[in-house]
Length: 525
Image 1: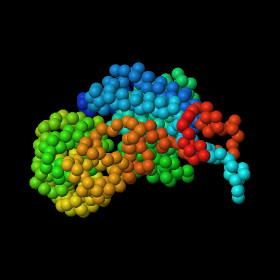
Image 2 (image 1 turned 60 degrees about the vertical axis):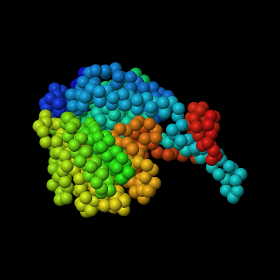
Image 3 (image 1 turned 45 degrees about the vertical axis):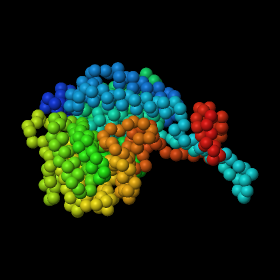
């Protein structure tokens, strides 16, 4: 089933000499399949094919694109247990996680299909001509969203289904009318190829143009660099590290024709625990957050890496309880030896900082590629002075900052870099006494959570998954939910255009029966 080759549209290709294998972190050994990295020739061929496919695909009706997306979902499910086992062998994640993430991926595809069938997402706006208007006549103007062109999607290391080959970025771009070239993640290239085969089978069954989808192998950064530099690529989707996302953003901005890079990057997801909540339920909060910090071995972009409270006896009690609870949890495997190595290196760098106190560090023997969870604490002044302590440590690690008072708490929040989420734990309506703190938090995050945990991202229209830089490169957009389609389109106006040549979305007769704004009024058919 796994060839190890690149998919240039519906053609398998392996012209390169550079090969690699994926790794099973549980067994601590390489998997069997060998993958061939895409060459410059193959990259160019994939982009050219996507460019040609765009000429046709941009005109495919929403209903037919919906059939395509639903067919992708069906084909992924058809791969069944073989796909699940490949996912597990390349990520070390358990079968339950694999099936849950597959369900999320299939659900995303079907959500976009439903969006396309309904059709109003194009935001059609019509302002009819007023030829007799004084002192000047008014032209007929009609506006809607149109696709950008070929999109490159970078597979994410920590979500081999939901943020990779046929994940949210790909589903949104295909829904928008953009061909997609996936730069497969080297850690789960086999999973990526199997999903790619499902996408291409769906494309063939539903009559989509060859080149609407390609999947390129890459063991490092060079394939991605070449793709982003290619003049035929019109936008980029990325989920990963700040270093990686920033590098792509810089490449894209220096092109002769700069293009948007929608990157979701690092986040420590600050959690504020207010005094009354600590007083009333410090033990329960500590137990809940021990589970959240270690969930998925801390390999979620919404992992709570920073906890803030006002210095008190109950905060000390919470720190002690959190430290006791977290070492009761058995360590779990990380995605790859490289990720374990980066975690240990970043953790050691943090632990070497002056003023940081380790309150829990799992010290028993663990299997290869398993992560030792840790809790640390630091005084507010020290945290403010040392920005090294502000950086994400990808893994089961969290830091409790002991603030002097609410003023310092607000100052610390305002000094943080942009984040995906912020959480507030509060009791007895004490939240109203911390409005300045909440306002500061709102300015730093894309989503705010009340009395919960940040881990867990619901896929729905109201979800905002993105935030001020560096949480994402453009805080106006989400990477999750059907509204993420807006990243891959641009507004376009027709002026005084003949009715018979207008898109169906903008014709007077409204043949698609979509919601539109006409002469300043929302018209619901």
